[in-house]
Length: 325
Length: 294
Image (cartoon, rainbow over all chains, first blue to last red; front, top):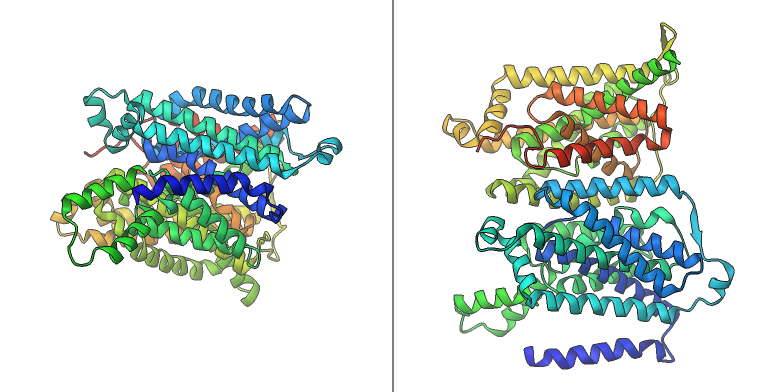
């Protein structure tokens, strides 16, 4: 499997990069893929804080919303797009730095409901100040093309995944994992718990903000407050858990599953996908903490190694490996 | 001026009684089981729909329908506890709370989507014959329905307090909340106590939902909003005292009402959240009551 991994990744990347150039790639395909990249990017950014550092942030939509809001406002006021795009990420980062210190003093569940309330407060405020709709003006609409949106979304997703891979193998990332497993133990071996949490929080917010910026670039018309609604947090949580929390490929697998089910099923039965995701989510929490990845792992192992049972050591190693990549 | 403020105060108290009632079930379950059921708002929503359909299909007055809605939600809570939440009891407290939050979150999505599937996303409310009647008192207007809501909420609080203090099962619940090991040693069936508490919490959500469908409106999406309100009330009031929770609700209602008067209606919701965040950051550790038994 490991020897097959790199060629597979290269082929997949090449296919994704070439796809818009192919004659049969329709706008529909591109739209679905852009939505997939946005969901995957948002979930991967959430996973950095929740999966690695163990802090369940239920206010992720605040950062996604801030990124989209700033980018949209600047871009529609004719600032260069790249500047508007980066400004979205920067503002989300600054906001994370400001609220990070008080928020991360809260532990476990209090952090979760505190961030939820914070995001709701921001959502209401934006709704009060900017109640209206944001539609692209004529000239921008005339020049609208899906291809650059596609590459931007794909590029951001790749950057987030590469950052995650780097993080997980770095001293910083190992510190985060230590914090996730046991804060007191991490502290006692010299890991600065608060600083690791804050770093994860800020990286996570930065990428969530940039994902929001991609959304602002991609969508023709939406209400300003729409990107602040808790739906975005919930999608990220669902996708990450169903795919496999704490693993880099977890949010990616979850996002593919999510978009497939949503866009295949939701066309006939609105909202039906949420029933499936909700039930799956509960199942994952109760009996399958590794999500779809763990399921895959179990199924493939079932087929392969029937006669000699894997030793406990090997099983432990496999489990550890599955958690990382 | 004085009269307007007084009128605002009164409507704040009347709304706040509902907030307190909404928080009552959540607080009870959290205090005893150490389970934070974020789907509490969805149970309220289902209670509201139950009352709505009982009124619309059979013409039963919503206040009488409480006698049906409460057992219905009690049974729903019973099933939810056996099916989902009971498995959490084996975990230590931190893990239990975290997993209950996640399960509640999944449940939120399922219940909300099912409600949309069955009953559409429309807002519904019960319009009784006496919907627009109101009493006048010193020039102040007291809507009959909201007043009845206050009375029902008061009955629920006092009834619950009496139940907890005077009956065997009530004392079992309090003992289990205090220290479940000691409770088990003194012969209390802790598992059944948990089951009873969770079902009772759901039944209280049913009462709140019924009152909401009469005085306000229900739609599949109201759950999160009511869960947040209940959480704010619990943060304000702490755990442990049902009457305290109820007064916390009234405090929130009055604060909201006055801030709507002074700053404008759109800031009504925001004020509660901001108070919540301030209290949370001032007391990051012992948020829910100061009582730490371990």
